Length: 297
Image (cartoon, rainbow, N blue to C red; front, side, top):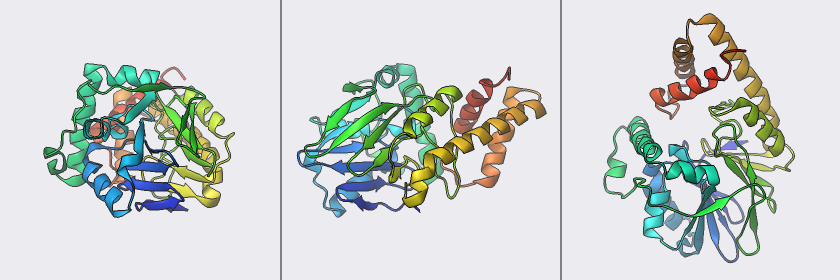
């Protein structure tokens, strides 16, 4: 079962944000954590939901960045400035990206593009101090890291492939996995693959995640997956990745260049999914990076 409406998932576990940009809140006896950090324009939604759901904002002491792409870090600058006591976490590679002025400029630019695509304008951002300015710092997470919330804890797994900085979080008490985009994106009834960094690592990361006992899979886009599908989600993501490789190789054979192949794949993507949240120019970059991994195949 796939659910994208914000609300309570289980005891002390909440889905916040919007359908296309999800943030999860996990409450412990001593503190709470926001897991993943969505897109900047969801900040007003997030604050309203925290109030409406009766969530204690004062207990939120941790924000975990699962990877450094613009659509997964958006709420961090605003909330860190609003709540200075909050600790921000990312992988070592993630912090390298988030302290790179060129990368920060891309994050801010892509945020505006997607805000206009999804909301029709950037009004949701106009009154917020949302931009990254290389002024946010925090702690580093790696394989085996653990964040204690009191009676609960979060375990971290390094899962590169979608990006070089990707990590996933696992909450063993409820058997909940937060893979970010290290597994497929659950758009409608599909498994969307975006292995823009390294396909080999992407498949290896899913092999690692497949060893976990999963009853709920909380995706960063389009909500969470529960029940029988959650148990088989990683295996089905791997099958979808194999199918994506076949499509990439076919496009390279049929088109005269990587650029033309990427454009054709993006056109096909939006022909099938016209409401997909990513700006076409951004998705073009993702397909181009995936194709380049198979030029000599």
